[in-house]
Image (cartoon, rainbow, N blue to C red; front, side, top):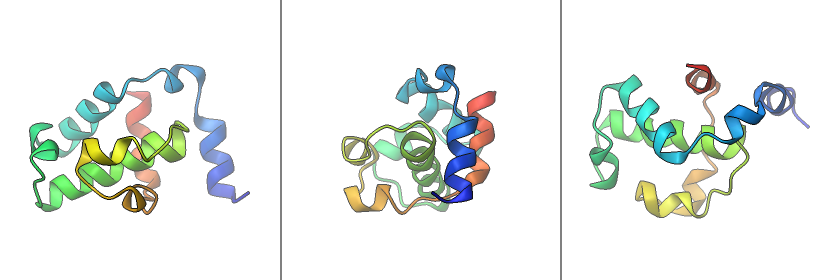
Length: 95
């Protein structure tokens, strides 16, 4: 197990695991200053791409949810969910 993965698992609390996808999307979009509708509409801006990356990383790597069901919600291919890796997103779970 990588050190990053181990620290991420240690950082996730039971409260984090109950965080809804809607709340997570809202936090990421607010952090980046975009509307969540930009994700659904398939926006290709750098901010929309960054938001998708952050949501995927937090939802799958930190919170331990499956990525495949998330892909259609973000308008991307399932394999792209697992490519996201950005530890800077972790701090949004504690706000």
